[in-house]
Structures are given as structure tokens and as C-alpha cells.
Image (tube, rainbow, N blue to C red):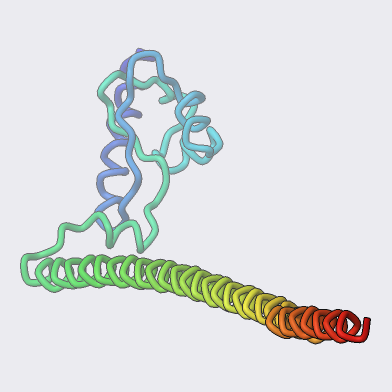
Length: 203
């Protein structure tokens, strides 16, 4: 008799649930083996009392059978709207908008990559330009130093040559010319010979 009453209660609760859900939609759960009115509410974060109320259950009709579909809670308006299948007319604009959004996202990523690549290339070109300028400045400095050293060497050689010429001139002035020495010797010799002849004649 108790089983009959329980069966009638379950049938009545399911009928009432079916009637009430015509105006309201619920999140549903299919009962699995071993599940009870206590374990199912815990899984969905509701109390046993709330679970029994939404399914119009009493403590005389708490037996659940595997495969039985029970309600968990009433769906929100947003969940109801999401659960409704979109018509083709509604789906096309949504799909087109989705495609457009995806294209815009792809183009945005491409622009970001191009900008990043351009910035990187510009930075690399700037670094290369700085290196080239530094190299040219070093080369110009080296050429300037080389020219300065060459000028200093030329001035040194010129000074040495001038000094050598001055010393040669002073030496030339200090020493008589070889020809003048020869003439003086000849004159002296001739004078000696004349004096000797004169002395012989007197004698």
C-alpha cells in the first residue's frame, strides 16, 4: 500500500511539474544509479528543501529512479534565451557579425604585428646608422691623426735640413778654400826663392 501511495505521489508530482513547466523552464537533471534527493542538491549547490519544492516532492515521495528527470532550479531569462535555437533569419546576422568580429580581430593582430615589425626594423636601422656614423668618425679621426703625424715629420725633416745647411755654411766660413791655400803656399815659396837669390848675389 505504501508503494502504491509513493507511486501515486511521484506520478502526481511529475504531472504537476509538467504542468508548471509549461510557463516556466527549469534546469534539469537525469537521475543516475545511487543518486538521492540529498546528493543531487549538493551537486548543484541548493538545499534538499529547495530541490523537493521545485519538484513538488514530499517525504512520502522521495524515492528516485535511474533515468528519472528532475528539475533543479528555474532558468533565468538569459539562460532561456540562450537555450532557444536561433532561426535561420536570426542566425545569419549573428553569424555575419561573428565573422566580421573575427575578421576585425585578425586585422587588428596583423596591424599590431606590422607595427611591431616596423618599429623593430626602424630601431635596427637606427642602430646601424649610429654604428656607421661612429665608424666614419673614427676613420676621419684616424686620417686627421695620420695627416698631423705626416706634417710633424715633414717639419722635423725640414728643420734638420736647415740645421745641416747652417752648420755647413758656418764650417765653410771658418775653413779657407783649398785653392786659396795653394796660392798662398806658392806665393810663400816664390818669395823664399827670390830672397835666397838676392842673398846669393850680395854675397
